[in-house]
Amino acid sequence: MRHGSRPLLALALVLPLAGAGASEPGPAAGLTEVSVVVTGLRNAKGQVLACLTAQPKGFPDCRKDPAARNAIVPAGTTVRISFGAVPAGRYAISMIHDENANRKMDMALMMPKEGYGFSRDAPVRMGPPKFDKAAFDVSGAAVEQQARMRYLF
Image (tube, helix red, strand yellow):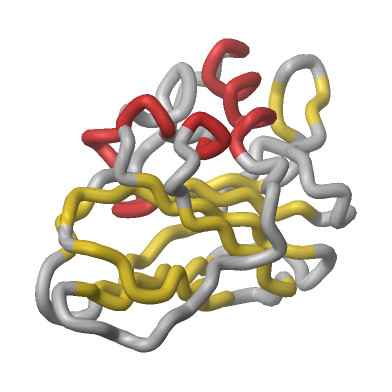
């Protein structure tokens, strides 16, 4: 896998999250529960920061989408993150393993020192994947994505 500085620098912006967690209203008519199971964390230090967006321009840096759902969960070797009930649509998830719990991706020479991952386990090539590579449809039954945390160092 080749890595360039452009995409991984963008990952540094992905998840300094504004909120401490997604609100989780009970399922209502027309809403679907969305979650992601993240595997491959190298340790249980810190936390996992994640965001869910329906806006291609809001991915992977969810700060560009005021309607994005954010979540923070304690790290473990495997974690499950719930975003609550969301309207039908097409969404993508980005996440980082914030090992030192400083709410940002730490970098070394413009490369991430901490883990990162995306819904649909979208591959990283010369930067974060485009929205379409990580996007999945939400409608009807609950959706549980699977994603693997990746590390460069």
